[in-house]
Length: 74
Image 1 (cartoon, rainbow, N blue to C red):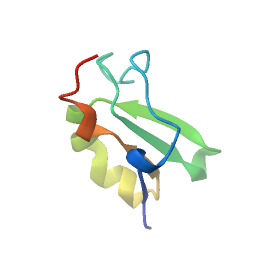
Image 2: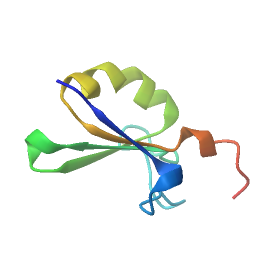
Image 3: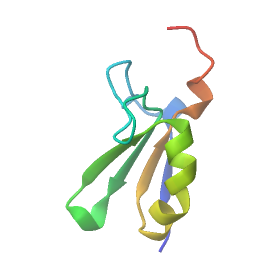
């Protein structure tokens, strides 16, 4: 029951301005890929990721966390 966290600074699969949180529609900074659900992807803003982080980790999701980009100018 381990999650894999991918450091976005070392990958090319960055989230874009078009990616939106599946819960509220705000800009997404986190992508969670659920291997047990056939690779389903969920996108989260920072707030909603914090709310669901423990459940995602428990489910063994692969996490792409780009919250370090929140203060970047578009």
